[in-house]
Image 1 (cartoon, one colour):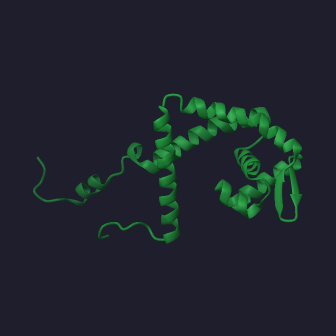
Image 2: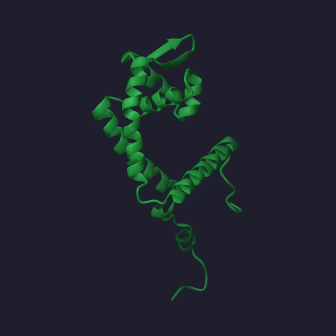
Image 3: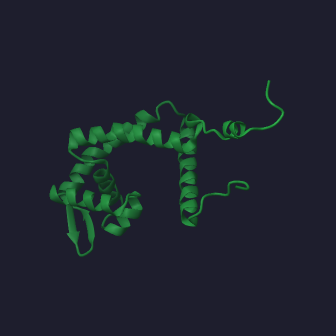
Length: 163
């Protein structure tokens, strides 16, 4: 039988976080699982890290970019982008001109070898989803990303209802 009054423990139980139902946790775990799977393949087959692959992909899609543009395009911090570009340059995959980088012929050829593998992994990951579910998932992820970006720009946590 519950007491007629609420205790601090009752309030805590009502506010308890169910980790498996907590969206940020689910997103992080899913991202970690996918990144781990793909990073192993990129590293073992091509000697690339995930940040290096992201930089290559951005350059293959967008062409010549400044490192500051790569930071925004890949959603990685400056140090990670700098290390990725340095590693790619060391392997002879990049052209540097003034303050920009681009893939050279060797980088483009490596990209062309890896892109089909990336598509194959994506296809395997979404194989159990209907095409309309994939479109919805991508739209929802973009909306969540936008909300997170917006909240990060505000600098304050969301309102906690009277706390």
